[in-house]
Image (tube, rainbow, N blue to C red; front, side, top):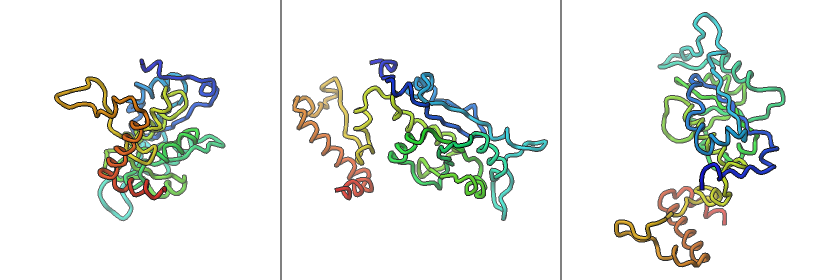
Length: 248
């Protein structure tokens, strides 16, 4: 099936307001980037979601339009100024705009599938892409920014993290994925990692597809997949496995 045919543009999806993402960045040319292709790109073209990339430097003042300054108390690097960042946030926040305001930061809470679903239902998001040593804490507090991390590692800035977050959300929007079940069975949706997948040829380099998957017995296949998911999660993500067990 082609990607174009994967879109089920229902009346509900067409009538709904688009999910709106506003990204505040020093590198607006990075967007939409990969979000302009495949499923996310087609959804963007079809108006299922919208994206505006706003240049933080447009809100700086003075001859040199500085967006950063040296850290108070000394130290290496530079810090994004609170006045400049606040003006950028206020510019994209219309009266009554209740979209979550998020700062992509390595010290933030980890992005989870549960959070992705919450953001999907929030109507959109305002994303601040950090740079340099970070953002002045006063604007984080003053504009009630929620800090989110996409992993325990350091990137050059928050732009790639913003793309990851948006891609995770957009694929869940109505009309983006053609088969809802394909999303429901993926890793993290059930609390477990996803089971292994196989396809033709039946034998490849001496390795065969597990016999149960060609048996035609859907009940047994479902049980096998569940057990595989449990074993994979227990081995690779014991933290997720323990959390899954505690649900019972």
